[in-house]
Image 1 (cartoon, rainbow, N blue to C red):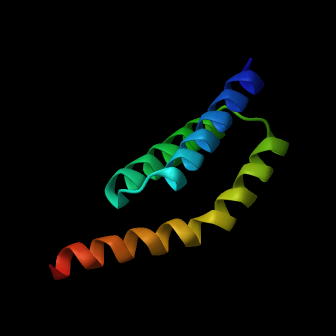
Image 2 (spheres, one colour):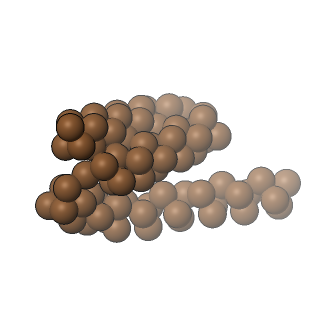
Length: 80
């Protein structure tokens, strides 16, 4: 049961991440990316060990991109 829940949550996180790349508005894109992160964390809680290792690897790989985009967005908003 936990494997099914974690796979559904991981699929939802992937779908949110894909949708966020297709959006033109930066703010909507960032909100969708944050929703993907929340879905990712929730699916991480219910996943078995091997799937957790795979998910952590993906998170480390994409975290730098998401963090850079968020900090750049907030920096632009504060300077206006």
